[in-house]
Length: 331
Figure 1 (cartoon, rainbow, N blue to C red):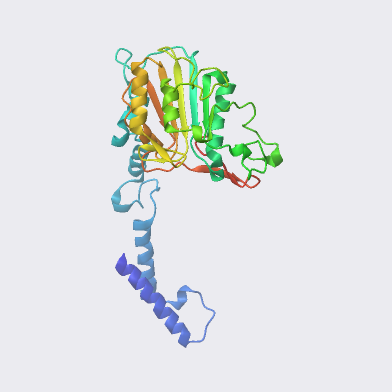
Figure 2 (figure 1 turned 90 degrees about the horizontal axis):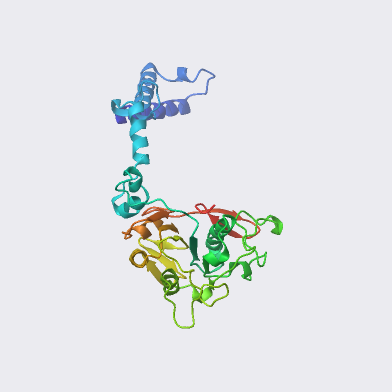
């Protein structure tokens, strides 16, 4: 192929050189090349079709090195559909493995879903993290529409984005777009339990385990640093985290980190204390799935917006707000 392409290049150079010395004549383009030059061009074209054409011929004629297009397509699909990842075996196990076991040995037991509580965390500060607050409020409003009341939800927002001085629509936050201030407002009917500097790793873990300091806690609305309602072995728990993170860590306000070991330890204690029946853990951050790497207790379902080495991307920007308003996963 290299030799043929070199010959083609040489033919073009000779053609250009020859016609620079001669007057231009109105003759067909191929007639301007000699017979040998035409043969070199034809051979180069055939070889280019054989080796460079993408697979897709019905008989695999133009597939490189004789591998049929059908076989290549099948191999490609198998590669894309594979869920195997040694770095995330614990997470994959909690989600997928039990589905392929018979009931006698499955760690997942059916149960009612009438006793439900949730803790929702947006750990990012600053105006440019508008979308993280929107992510959290989207989940919050979804639960409210599903019938879960405020006394069953702990909402932690590290920054008061709706009241930020740069927000052109003060007191409102829009997941799809402002539409002149008439878009869907996620702040409607919101009850925030932790905000600003109260949103810390320590506070998050104390909420999960119900271990508050003196003068804190209580499960009634308006309590200072409110805890989850009393849970037991019949309670289903949702834990949702959104913000910035990386390989096995999740950032709180750029000042401290929650690690995958912290999460695993908290869930293990909850299991020993019989504080849940089923627990759904959702992480919406870069390399989100790594936050579940260390989890090794039953009936914990882990979901992440990205795998190890992957980023979690924003969805779209609203020109009126001037920021990206929501992430792709939460959208």
